[in-house]
View 1 (cartoon, rainbow, N blue to C red):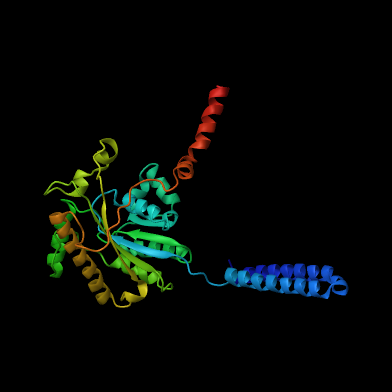
View 2: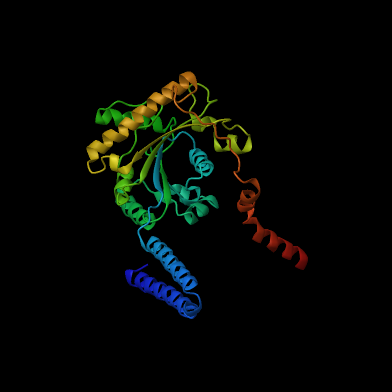
Length: 324
């Protein structure tokens, strides 16, 4: 909304409210001649009301501190995003404001891809000359609103296909590779954080995911496949998540080399946690653990929310059955 329109709305609301208070004071003015103390109380009340109105007005006009966060995570399964989204719901944290950065090919999946587009998810082609503009424009469109941006710096799931590519890349740049992870990509994440840097309170959350039940030597995406998870009920009975959080102001986004080291340090910590998980089935030794069962916080109303969009289809079906 332009500043001129906001200014007009401000003065319109201010003048109308002030006139209403003046009208009430004028109507009560005769009371002064019959009961001066009561009249004084009425004026004091109108004064208090006006002060509260000013507080509300300033709050509406002022720049609001909105809840914004970026989640980075390792990528083991095609369903990682589902579990993270479920966690946001259970924590009551921006589940309705989630934006996910995905591969462009997913955009064209029938039905699911259409829904992702309506959700304003961000689709990248892995070509920075193209992705740069797309990412910049979409981040600008949400930069002043509450959101949780989810991206997987590894770019794809850990698999037989992606693992050798990660090894080859680390050998090329002369750095140490990971065993349980892929080498993270810096460009998209750094650009995202720089684009959102106008909010110093932006939180960057590092999520480490681990899944029990995967046989030794088998990649998670090959065990907990979409088919196994949703058609054969072969799904993880528990998801282990380790969360760490940083304020954007504590992350060196102004220097790409320093930021790269910061991100690699996060991945080294993930590697240590995942190594511990494979030995002990826990992502950390000691510390605070919280068991969060999957389920609706408010079963009745949230079930209605989940199925509300079936109502139009049901109505159309009933009408067709009656007429045909």
